Image (cartoon, rainbow, N blue to C red):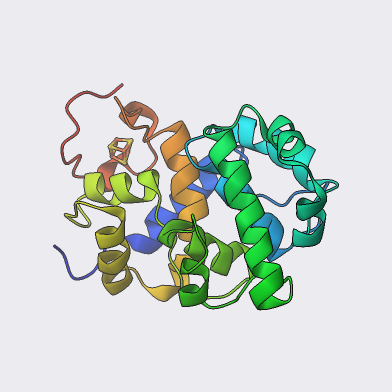
Length: 222
Ligand code: SF4
């Protein structure tokens, strides 16, 4: 493990330039058709788990345009909620979770999404990634680092860290990545992982930061 990341400012600048044409990932993207609330961020994030961004986007739009508070969600029969979010992955389980979370928010938090990381983790179906995303993009708080599969894979390939799980990556990155980069990190690295540094055979030939990459465990590239 390294103690600091060399050329970090340059790397972020190059990535931002190159990735400008690509839209933000669904969970951090501003949604014009629904209110920008912590509840909307939370539900979009739950819908996005194991689901492609464009499918999540359409399901979020169908559900959250009209049903964007816990009260409104609870008025929906399960079958109708399932129909609105289909075909997101595990749509039946997600329907139950969304209902359960909405009920908990009403019973324990007056219908608001709690704004502490620890309380978010007590909601059924909410793990570290979702809780971090809600803190950053829902509550607009600083000091959180959401780590998904891209945010875990790429820093390992770059040689910044040597970690086995997203949680380990979160803790390790927090020690070596200056705080000023935390808010942009998830949005930027998810976009990068979806378009260039993809899971299998990354597009190293058009990577803007190739000269700074150790390509750890990259067996084939394009
Ligand atoms: S050089 Fe290849 S492996 Fe390294 S960050 Fe770029 S795309 Fe990923």
